[in-house]
Every structure is written in C-alpha cells, then in structure tokens.
Image (cartoon, rainbow, N blue to C red; front, side, top):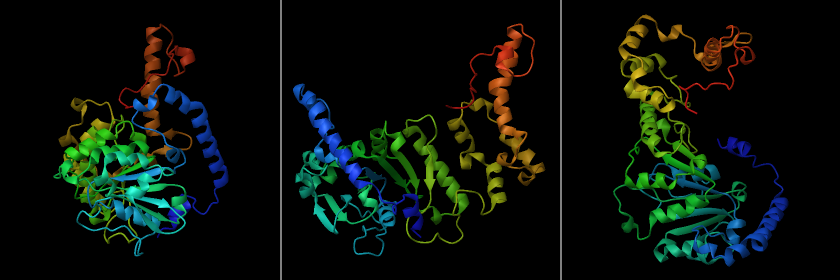
Length: 388
C-alpha cells in the first residue's frame, strides 16, 4: 500500500508553484547582479570546485541513492514513484543491474534523455558533468515523467559499489562523479541489505566523501523481512558497529529498518524493530552472550562510560536466572502523573541535587532542598556519563 506516501509528503496539497518560481527568479537576479560580478572580478570560479549555474539555481532538491550493488536502491525508487509492473520501472535483479547514473526528473511526458544531451543543455543543472568525459556521459541517463513527487524533487539512482572492482575498470572517475552528486544532494539515502555489510575500500572512500554531510544522510537496512527477528538484531548490530567509526558524529548512527518495495512482508517476520517474535528466547540469548547483540559495544558508543565500569555479565546471568525479565516493567512504564519518571529522577539527582548538596557543603551553607538559590550551585552541571 502506497497511500501513506502521498499522505506523509502531502502530495495532494496544492503548492503555490507560481510563488516559488517567482522567488527563484528573484534569487537568480540577486546572484547575477550582486554576487557574480565580484566572483568574476577576483576569478573566484578558479578557486572553488562548485560552480553555480543558472540551471542549478532553478533546479529542484536532489535525493541521492548510494550503497552496494543489489541492495534495493532501484526498487526503492520504483516503490516511491509507483513504477512497479509498469513499462517504465527501473530494472532490478539479484545481480548488479544498475551500471548507469540514472536521473529521474519531472517532465510533461515520459521520455528518456541521453547523458550527452543533459550535459549540453545549459538550462539543466548537469552541464558541469561534461568534465568527466565521454565514457561517463554514456553512463548517464535521464528519465522524465509527469509525477506529483517529481514536481518537488529529483531522484538520482547510482551504480552499486562493488568492492572487488577497480575504478579504472569503470572507464571514468567513479568517486569524483559521486562527489559531484553528493555536493549537490539535499538528502542522501545510503542503502544496505543483510547480505552486504562488509565495509571495503570503496565504501570507506564513499563515507570519507560524505564527511560534513551527516545531517543529510539516512542509513537504510533494506530487505529486513528476509531474516527472523533474532538474526535481524545481529545484522543490525553488525551494521551499526561497522558504520560507527565511519560517520563523523558524536551520536551513533541511526539505521532505518524495513523492506522498501510494494510487496507484503514475508510471513513470520517482524514488521517493527522489536523483540516481539519470541522475546523470552531473544532475551535469554542476550543474557547468555551480550556480545552477540553488541550490547556492551553499543553502551560504550552511546555514552561516556569506561569499559572498566561495565557490569559483570556473569552476575547479570545469575540475577536474571532468579528474577525473570517479565517481572520488571519497562522504563517507559515507570512514570506517574504526580511522581514523574524514575529515570528523570535519577537524572535530576546526578545533574542537580547531588552537585547542589556538595556545593552547599563547600560553601559553608546549610544543606537544604536542591535549589540553586539556596546552595549557590551556579550553572547547571552536566551529566558526564551522557554523550552530548
């Protein structure tokens, strides 16, 4: 069912296209009259790699799909645009199928556009791609079609990363081309599937190129319904741990898990990222071997806790042998309207009440309630065990 796509993206709403077009034209005029003359006077275009053309100023936001081969990038595009089982769907398969950079754009009618034509058209934003040579332009293809979503964005589907292929075998500078699209993309989906989690040299290079673009990246674990829940959690942990050192953010990378195509989930698989297929079995596996699910590594990645302060796994194994997990409420259920949440009280004690008490003792004041006015605690201390 694709109805949620139109609803979530509000595709049925009438956009004020004329207002946007007028604003873009004003932006173009400002650039040409106020900015470009200074650039030309000091030859700024020779210093920067990203030259702004009129076509780029007026172009729609770009959504870029990257990742290993046959992980479902083209299937995601087909699903988003509703192209499945139509003559215009992008070709998909188990073997590497997409060897071209495919740009899917809005047009009045459905037609394909050769890369050479796209690069030669100054009204488009792709004319700078000529610098990558004839071999690349033969691997660039455009598809125009009337579609509500394409009135707002342009999709770019890329060839899959194949770790055992050398760049020169492609016949063009693959990484340089990827960088060109990355520099202009507004949203970047990096797609994996459970069978392709290894991070090789080409994927490492790709993530180096994505440095500084972390806020635009969405990591997708696709084809999740191919695995039972226990196996999916192991795969999720492995992917999480492989990508953590490659992404330049203080928080661990968020991974979106699903199966992005127009078919029902495989039977006997979870529709959500949870342990509800057999929670007691999964929990027992976690207690017996927490490293199997990257429990402690995830704690170290998400917090400032030292590895020497991690709990003793044998003690927890014995504890849960006597006290079944079902005896305990989840933290989200340990809240009341009047008393608040237990975890919030711990946080308040660490960041406010205990420092205030110590501050009152050091200042010679009478310890009382946790009020900075009474204790002179000054700036609110930070919880040093929480990563900011």
